[in-house]
Image (tube, rainbow, N blue to C red):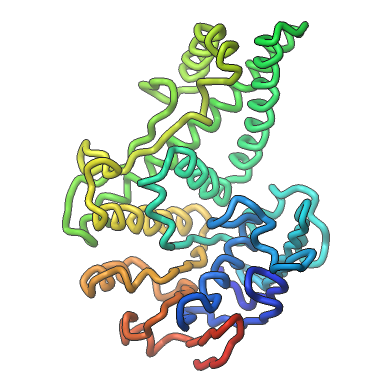
Length: 370
């Protein structure tokens, strides 16, 4: 899979930019603050309909403009055009100029994996960041997961509203609340199973990659559901979650929120049994995130039968030569890679020889060289 071109209107610092990309290696370079990262972000938003850097869509729209528009031509088994329009109050997506009403019909049209400076937040940040990340990756892989997650989010919101009403001693239909809880549990079971399966697949790949990059053994990712699960059998999970919700009903009413379910899960990055969030150096944490992303590439290639588009946002400047070389060993030459950097000297000369070079200054292409 590749993105052949992207057309940007009123996005971040860009009024208009049309960029044609090479099917293999592209290097976007220039000083800090010129808009290099914004190009990668625009590609990410085109794929996911949301940014990896901002929760608020309005932040993506250029100052004093009513909307931002992103268009991209994607080549996979065949060619198609994607478009997203970000307004102040909503967003619209199109495939081949036709409106798409359901995001589930759009979200996996373009597969992207990004390496960026924000990645360390996956380890250092709070559990919601890790859940968000896993949700995004699984949604690219599985429409069923994306749909189940949307249903779960709606059910969670309604269930919490009922808990608040019960706390406020409003008259509610407890039979409906029980049915609502059953639906909530059923969606939760599927999400638990999919997350566990994904982590298992990562752990089949991660240890070897981490060792090859850092020379350290024992790396693994631990899935930490909000309820203790010794196995991930459907009936077993359903029983455990149902019991947890039933036994803690009064506590939930008091807190006016649902305290057990996938929305409370966490994931740990570990060396042996040591959580790198608490016991790892910054270097070990960086290698953990790189390992996660590299492992995902293999999962995407296996599951989707195509390579995702790889976005590397100023990654090379943080790595010594050995780690750069070890990283590059795991990135297939047949993948499309888009790299940003402030310093071409930080990029391996072998990559520079093959790359299309794009110089950016103040939101404009000032030099383009193949």
